[in-house]
Image 1 (spheres, rainbow, N blue to C red):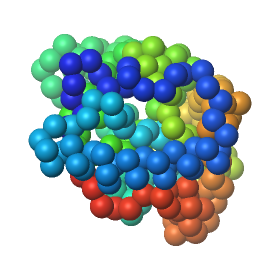
Image 2: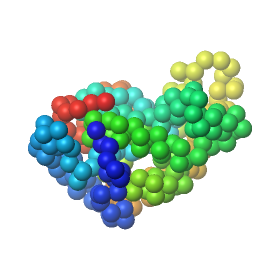
Image 3: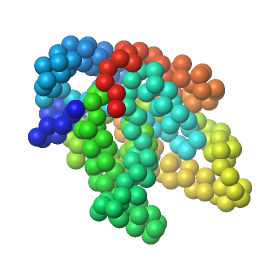
Image 4: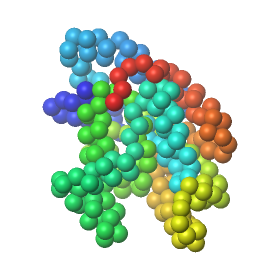
Length: 243
């Protein structure tokens, strides 16, 4: 597991460093090599090396861009652990703990769940996992989320996947999977898209300037889109610990 007395992320790479896309791919190869040598060796000895750190990819895209489905395909093919920020919040919401109460109250009052709660849930999921490679789906949703993640966790992602999809196509996909009154659904989707463009795109632009973003054309069949994603993860195999 990735547990240690002080969170492993505090021991790794500095935040404000621009990484060329090719270097990001090289880090994939290094991570796979290091895992199959150092980490497995220390795991067999009964002790994980505290000098290691997980490999993190943020996965971003608008509602209906298909990022969740592609995350599942990446996880199944390359052995990543898929962490959905929304799923973690929904799971925590039904608990009787302090976080569950705060999440329920935030939703009831129409407020955004505090960034720290979401980040702590993501951090906990990573620390409790035996995997070393993670897809964080749907987070960060804003610059405030991003800044809070860097402050609390202490690192930036190694890679950012951004699924680009025309607004009309995203609306079509979301509406086709929803039930109920079409007019209400249309208005809801429009609001979600507006929020995405206002809050999420600045995050994409920030990481683009640092050379970490890989944009994926999210138009086509699931398999066609996945073939565009596959080369980015070719250095990883499905072997290795999973959640």
